[in-house]
Each structure stands twice: as C-alpha cells, then as structure tokens.
Length: 124
Image (tube, rainbow, N blue to C red; front, side, top):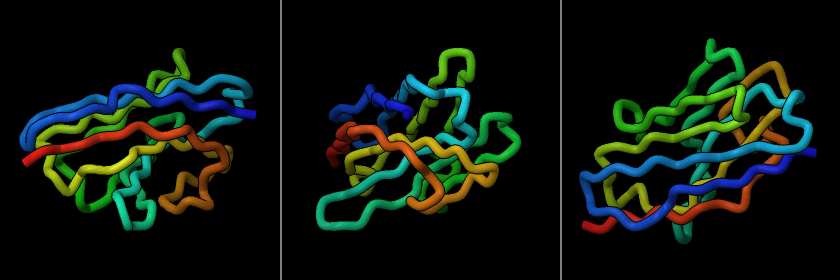
C-alpha cells in the first residue's frame, strides 16, 4: 500500500504561482510513475503531468506545457508541481497519483494510488 498526501494548494490571482507537493509513504519502493491530475467543478478528472522515477519520462497536458513543471525528490519520496502563470481555468482540485507500472501513462488506469486532493483556486 502507498499513501499520498498533497499540500500547497490555495487561492492565487491570475498570473501568480503555486507549488504543490505530494509525499508518498508505505511501499514507496514499488512506485515508478508519479503524477498530477485535476478535476474542475462539473468536469471529469484530467491528466496534468507525470514523471518516471528515473526522470527519463516526463509528460504534460497541452494546456499546461510551458507553465507547469513536475519534479521529484526520490530520496524524500516526494513529487512537486510548480505552477506559474496561473489562469482561472486552472481552478480545480489537484490530485497526486502514483503507479507501479513500467510505463508512465496519462490515464487514470495507469496509476494505482491516489491522494485526497488539494484545492487550487485562481481568481481573475
């Protein structure tokens, strides 16, 4: 079992920045991919970014490319999401996810463990 705890959400004005963190505990040796998804009100959960343990695979949704950066500290079992140039459309609950598979995908089914989520609100 892997437990994930997110932190760093909050309220920010458009154009501002936030940094999300997600700390993993439990069977962390089994984790390869770690990523972030988000769900806005009335919408389905969508992929944001993911990164493999080695760092050789990093993926971003088109909507956040050039603005968001995912990084990992494997020694701390933590993944980060640096979000810059935030827009009101980025308002959502952001979920951390971890997967055991060799392939780091961009679908919900590619990840085995999920955090509780952290709210990000961007005001215009």
